[in-house]
Image (cartoon, rainbow, N blue to C red; front, side, top):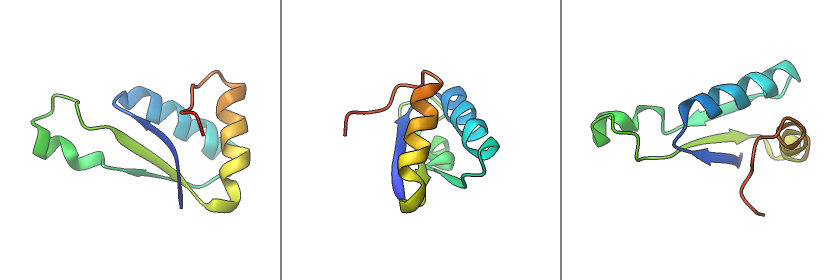
Length: 72
């Protein structure tokens, strides 16, 4: 698994997940339950992971839909 996206914006994670699943790319959202530790203030980033062999396609899909990705 490779990290595709890291953000504190839960709507961005949901949008990226919907885009990827529409293209049959399985993704996994990490750090979802960190709000228990942080007190639900949204400072801990959530990570979106994809399989290594889907990383290139997943990045292309998000770029095509104007989702900003961290520099590689």
